[in-house]
Length: 183
Picture 1 (cartoon, rainbow, N blue to C red):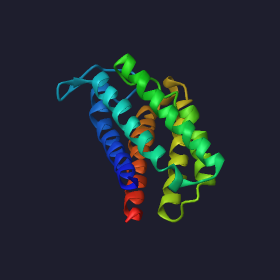
Picture 2 (cartoon, rainbow, N blue to C red; picture 1 turned 45 degrees about the horizontal axis):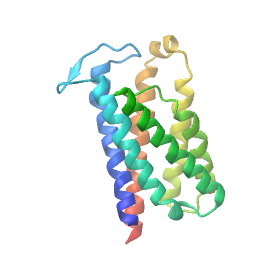
Picture 3 (cartoon, one colour; picture 1 turned 30 degrees about the vertical axis):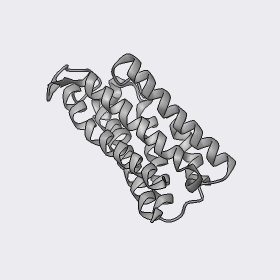
Picture 4 (cartoon, rainbow, N blue to C red; picture 1 turned 90 degrees about the vertical axis):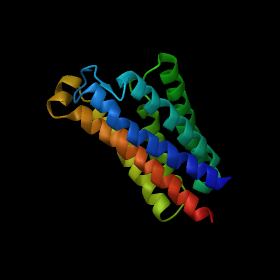
């Protein structure tokens, strides 16, 4: 059961990171959507994939791993916030049939800091949780920069690389570590 939870995070993270490439190629390098298609899908379809499947897999895997991450009440509460936030983000993306604004970061970033500080896991798992908290907080900070300013220095791509590629690869690595330590 714990191995399956880690596998869900691993698969979700890899799918999310990989989907960013065609999404951003279809969307374009700035916040302005240039409306291209990549492999027959526009940015809305790629965004729908990127904002639903990984979110659900990661949330389910994380929730099923909560006792391994930490048994403290504050850790469990922060994990619950993260999982519910990811599932609500996936549901809204599904409802709108595209990825929406990353408002989820306003809850994920602080909750990830709490998890990183209170988790009882050690070694690589703890380091990955800390790196994930840094990535989510950094993405939130970049996301707060006005789009006109952000576009002038490539902030749209930087945000995506941190939030969607980096964050998802960290989730994948965390899932892999949990799978390996299960044996």
